[in-house]
Length: 251
Image (cartoon, rainbow, N blue to C red):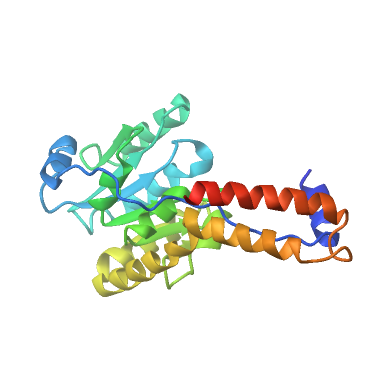
């Protein structure tokens, strides 16, 4: 299927419009409530990983990276948040936590419906996936002005400008992941710089921006002419219908 798609895209013009997300305000826990829920000291430096706990998401790589820097940052804690459907993989993670002696500093709270609170009170978000189609958690963290480290696993490469609005490392490289985490935790000014750039960058991926790009594409298609678009009458009908739907949603 991938080969067929690749061949098709070589001969048919296409426009890529990324998924949009809603950056609107979300309900938040108070900081004291958040700390109490996870039994965190007030000065804890929270590193968050958000997403389904499964092998392709790379949480075991993150755990290895955290193990390398935990001694240098005794105030750092790691929250691996997400649905834990793969019980065998979760057992591997828990066993490794025990092996590393990090039971008090690494938590797996499972699925959370208050991701906004988690992002608000963390210092760093890490997305260690081996493959990722998009990366909504990455965008949510960036929109909240948090430093993000992700892997070159697909979607994050389209979102993050490496060294500017976040950091990118190869997948399945715990050592490099740990070095990137160390850089952000140790260099406060650098962390602030990429966090500020991340907030600006995330604005390009909102639902409103995706709708605007889609509307421009439809308008361009409508004005393209028969030479550019086969079966132009049918294309016009579809485009007009989509534009009508966009207007309804925007109202």
